[in-house]
Image (cartoon, rainbow, N blue to C red; front, side, top):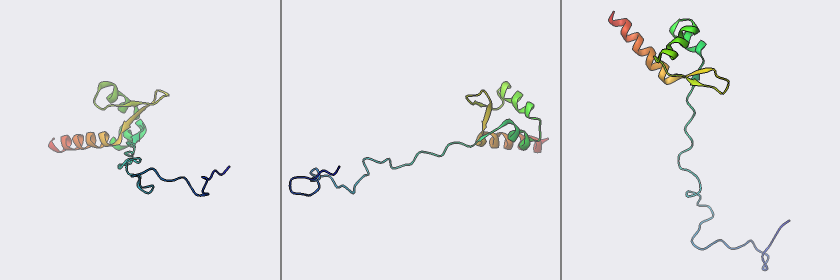
Length: 94
């Protein structure tokens, strides 16, 4: 159903508002991209260890894990990269 004003035109714009100006209605910065999450197997492949070792590291607090709704562990890729760099540096010192 199409509604028109008595004069047959569209309704007038409220005073002081530009219909093309939507800065105040839309956020300037889009939502940040979600962090990439890795499975224990993916982390294990990076370190060349068994996935159970990765799970032990998480339980011991060496790396932090996020739990999915199903109870599975996921690891932030950025945190794992930092941990990998620390391990590589420690191995170079030896």
